Image 1 (tube, one colour):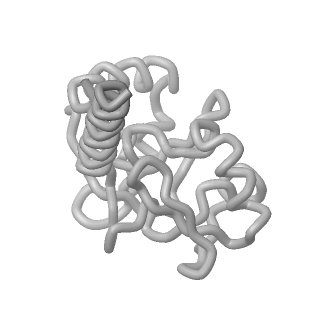
Image 2 (cartoon, rainbow, N blue to C red):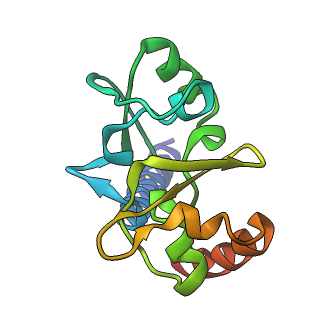
Image 3 (cartoon, one colour):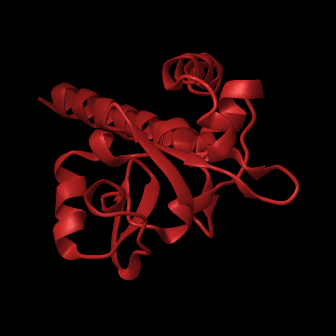
Length: 155
């Protein structure tokens, strides 16, 4: 019995260490501003009416990444289906990821939903609005290119 308890404890410790390591690795690839994803914007709001700032009082951490929400209802929707609402490429600029595999910060108000997925874009000097550049080409070819680059980050 002591051996069983020891082995169970050892296995649990190992699983917790792997989980913590996975969270840390995932978090290291995300575009976090002050440890919050999407610059504090509500990930669900993009799908239900547009970019909207979340509240630090309504938050949820998913696999090490913290999100703010505009309402408790949005927080609950996210908890029920986080993969549906998380931005592609860790919240980095989709255009920069597609063109050169770069992690470039975004303007949370520049976004596009394609195939039920959220893509965010840079919009500041010197590169300008990369959503406009993205829209000049087919979504599918750019998504394929960005997916290839992103897979190198999240092995």
